[in-house]
Length: 74
View (tube, rainbow, N blue to C red):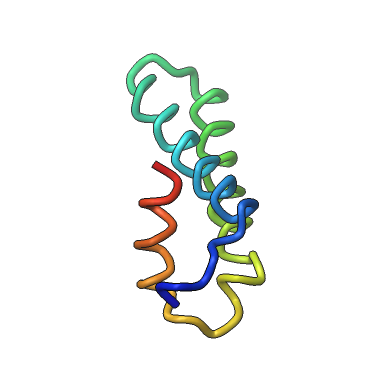
């Protein structure tokens, strides 16, 4: 897997997931209940989209792929 290309859309999904969690952390303690719920819903949606991507569901070594994906998305 280390030589296979990581799809650009998968990298973008990882970045969306990271951004959602960063938004929660950055604004911790300064959110209304509604904002907090909305941000967590965005994070959940980003994680679900990431894990539903065909590259993640193709039976590859997901731990290895996620490691490479996190590096590529940084």
